[in-house]
Image (cartoon, rainbow, N blue to C red; front, side, top):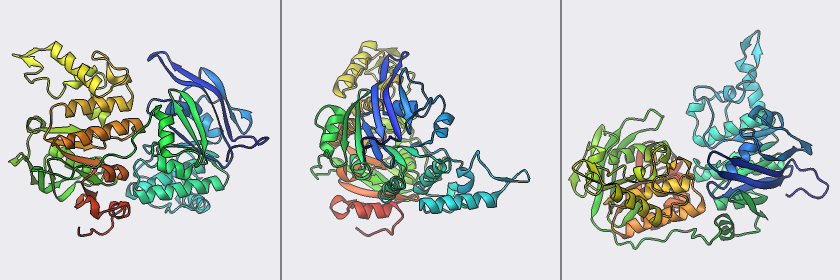
Length: 514
């Protein structure tokens, strides 16, 4: 509910402004906003539109150049995150800030530990956190080690940390990015319950359907300014997307023709050890992808998807199994050999794997092919050819605000992803590995990525799409598989599965025969 006349808002932002001189960006431009007690306000907008900067101003990470913040009617001078917490604000980041080896209780009370005779009192901590869990109606065991919890439960621990600090206004940043559909539904219900108890929530998301389900109001930002403030149900997804981007956006990907050709990628009996980050590795994975089709792999991150993509890209050696490209056995081949065979790799981590952020756009565009005759002759760099190619990527893939000689570090996430996709798809690849290609992108950039992958399929590439976004997998794929605990379930023809069935498999449901 919007704060009514005479009712003091829980949060009032008046004319906040933030200019970053180093990059010449006016990130937040005279933004005013209110959030009432017990109200859920969704904040949406394109990447680089100022949402995160606005929340960082509110939470004391940055200081505003102008404007004021009021909490429960009193002006709040917030110069640090501790100031924000003391004013009743809590923020749950997209990437959790938990100690995996600690229990739920130890994480929730970190920095506020109860003690007895100078020693940490586990029993008291567990009693305190158990009471909090009961009050919040959360499904958690205070004695469980966080490393042993599924992702959805870890997020509940983060929310419980904020509640333990008596947060009356919660900021949730992309809270469903790593959740299964069932976990996302549970989170929406939890947020509504928190609002019913009188707490306020700012919910930042790119997923318009969940925004419509959870929010009392939806605030839209574009280019640092608020351009829309609508009540729940006051605008369709298409109308919200138009407010965000400033033009009509195609929200549903076009289906394929269904005319798949020869098998271009084949994986047989792939086995791989778990990664150091806790991913589960691969267990006897078998998969084929044909020319002119997209095979989508759904699943919660950490179930072996990265290991599979890295093995096909030549970045990881299998313990057992076989990988073939267009009928040629390339098991154990190097990344260069895989690229020479026609494998393109859109990496999940564009910031550290897909790009060198300190290099120019031109250098990034040719980074996978700089030794080819196209860009060098007899060891001499063909600078004009490199520049022309970079200019072509900028034009064909609509990389905004970029130039060949510009260092890419300052570009938005959507534009960075366009550079990666332009580089990877420019050589008419046989096989395209697209790992989380729209992670963290806004609706306009997502539309662009979907079109690029659909075009690659239409031009005869075999596309392996790995995504934690179930709607994306369902919209783009001709066949769909699920990764769970290192095992591949499927692939199933698209006509044989629906959201509920795939969601059940993602959560560890029993494999179903297609």
